[in-house]
Amino acid sequence: MKSTKYFLVLTFLTLAFNALPARSQEVNNCIEGAKKDPEPIAKLIALGRAKNVARQAAEAANGGINKYRADDAMHGPVAQAPCTDNADGTWTFTFEGTVPGEKTPSFVTAVTINSDTFEVRVDRNQDLRTTAEEM
Image (cartoon, rainbow, N blue to C red):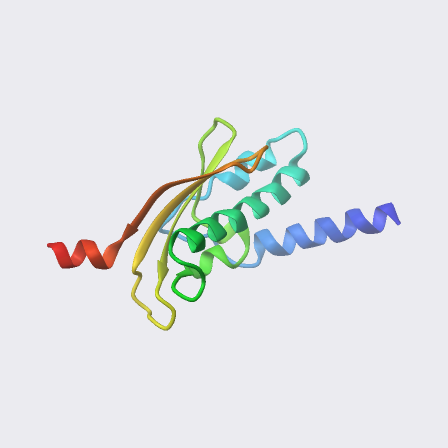
C-alpha cells in the first residue's frame, strides 16, 4: 500500500511539472528550490498548495470569483505559475486577473506565501483599469 502511494505521488508530480512548458514571461525558480529541499516531495506539494492559497487571496482581495478571475497559470500546474523563490522561506506569486467574461487583464497582484506556515501577504493589488483611466 505504501509503495502504491509513493508511485501515485511521483506520477502526479511528474505529470504536474512536465505537462506544459513554463511561461516564458515569468521565471518560476520555486520548483528548482523545492527540488533542493531535504524533503523535495513535501516541498513540491507545499508549493502547489501555496499557489492555490495565493490565488484565493487575490480572489478575496478583488471581491470574490464573481468579480475576479486569476490568470490561467494560477489554475494549472504549479510549473506554469509565475513564482519567485525569495530564498527566505517565502514564495511570491505575481499574476494578472480579469473581470469575468473579459480577456484583457484588469488587475496585477503579487502575493507572498510563507512555505512553512502558509502565512499570506498581499504585496501588490493594482487595478489596471483605474491606472489606465488616470493617465
